[in-house]
Length: 316
Image (tube, rainbow, N blue to C red; front, top):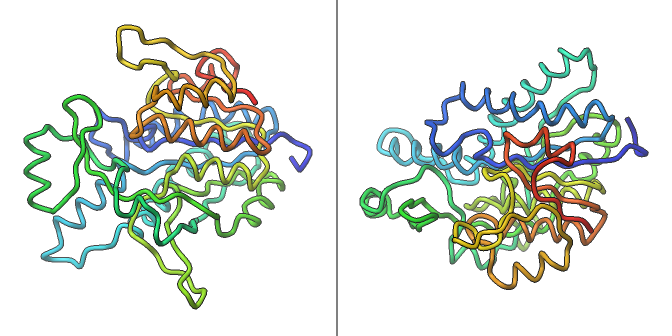
């Protein structure tokens, strides 16, 4: 491993570890992590430099709900601290699963998890207009109950499915980026920017202060990919491919495309703001720098996707 090896950044969605139709137990999350890392081992065998980032929407939503439910007994934790907690927990799940997979292959590469802070703008517009879905889904009736009980902002993510939304500021800068790049180039497999990173801003005196929100994890992956000069970005989500006219009668699967077509389709409104649009913007950002290709696919298709047999591929 070293600087001459190709570099990939793999962005695992929070739903890749905790899926919509499941309760999200630790056993389920470990099982999904082991499944997802079969695809990652393909990159190990091809001697790629590897950086992994992950979402935390289901997990941080559950932690926030627990914190609010227990507020009369235990002081609640702010959302930024819960992002840090889930970074550590999910990082541990991925790290141990990957260490075991490497051990079974008699591979001595090391895996480390970074607790990553992301610089954001203290005046980011999303802080006043929350749009990041977290936690579990509710019926409209239950959504109204929780909205009144906890003063949540809840929006409809899909027809009949409602979820809580929180601010999702745009990442501007990743702290410790040079350290991450150094380790990746050395051959260490690095897990960083989990859950988009912990949002923080610089006060007037230059010191850091945390902020309540969940950073756009896809843009964090793209920004991290730029920092480590990755050639490839794999975005692992809960659908196999990107579609035009998604869920409509004229739905069309996109298998292979380029920046110009994606920019046009994004402007035409083909991609939902709550789900696919942030991924497309992140892909376009990544490809506008050192990136050569982006693959968007599901967990169960990751093995075929790394062999160019599945998923949506966007080329430079």
